[in-house]
Length: 119
Image (cartoon, rainbow, N blue to C red; front, side, top):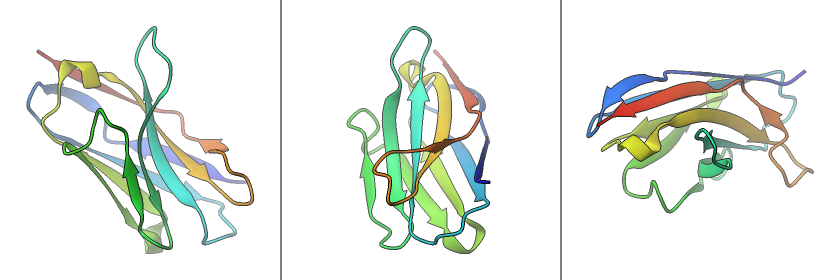
């Protein structure tokens, strides 16, 4: 059974930084992508960033480009999200998810971690 667990959320002032971590377990394949999404109260879920485990290819949502960086540790099945220059509008619950082929969707999700940016 695939399990995804996030950590690292918290309260930070605008302009500050936070680093989120995500670990996956129960995976039987080494070919997958790990991504970060976020959802603020009253808003739809938004794509933040993703990383392909094998190629290292990364992709970012427009609202975080240049401020957030996704990286990974393949040996540990972990992915990280370094968030710099945080803004109040980055406040949301951040979710880590796994896209495991042959599915083209993110099928496995963590419970989420709260990030709050104060102005």
